[in-house]
Length: 115
Image (cartoon, rainbow, N blue to C red; front, side, top):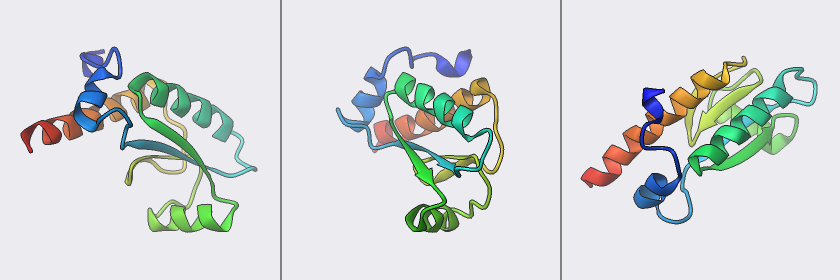
């Protein structure tokens, strides 16, 4: 996959963002969501691959609900990288999610190298 070139390890992310990643991949879930466990596993694997943080946000909690509303998330699973929504209320393929994360990392990497 072309979007993955240069991301075989998290060393590029560390170069741009320091030893501790500032980016966070979040999966918004509900206990009643049938596909949320699959979305959570997939997102965790991709976060590990890119060396970025991962967090599940349970929208059944008051805090999770408020966080979801702030991003206009009304359905699960939804996946967010930092505060940029990648997908709302549906499951996408692992390949598509990986591509979307790689594009955003590349964008942030270019911005970090030019500042």
